[in-house]
Image (cartoon, rainbow, N blue to C red; front, side, top):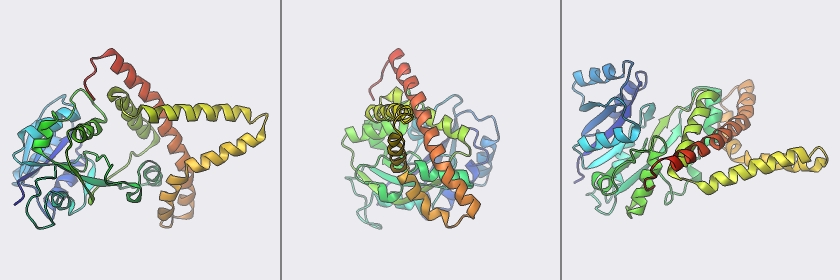
Length: 328
């Protein structure tokens, strides 16, 4: 028989999104034994919304920890959770009705069988839940499709993951010194501890992309700053700097050798091939003017994201050089 399962959520100023998330958890085909919510000091009506569910008898435990970052909030929630299996998600998502069941099945010998003691982590998946043309283009540009994922190498986001509490404890929990990319560092710690991962691609968390370029730029700046703090993906960031440096040189050199501009255009098309391939199936549902708008947004989103990363990464590296560098 599978051990008890607790779902943990961290929130801060999520008055509009926390209600639908909790409702989707209560409507799961396999309901959690409890939902542990840590509020990091909301100044809106988030806590009031959660207390409304509590008043209706929902199996929620609410902990208020003003000033707690995401890692601290998650660790606090897990420490107070009664379940031996922890499923994590985030505010701002819409969970498929069988999300938790799909995750928990990963811990079973089969879909209805006994617990498999060899499984430590079950990786769920996530999909874009866009509302506007910009959000459609952004989702296609930055989010890989399931057909692009190698389940054996996939590093799950903590908006859709389940793991044994013993595994969390064995690796020291989420890194509380890190404010962004904390779930990737947690994944790496689990991998380093030889935890066994199982991929559950049908355990879907649908989340809404950022709603404009300014929000998107800030999001990717903070992600890249987190990469720099945690010393993540240095080769990947170095390639990005080198690529844009060479592209800038080629752009200038094209004034003397026009063929270089053609080569630069061809390289840009290859660079955008993946996003346009993901966008193509979605275009059919849009009006002609919206199709054009989505197509034009793709290179703008790609460029904005790359610029945000190139600015944010050195900021994180500088932070790391000036602070005590925890193991990461």
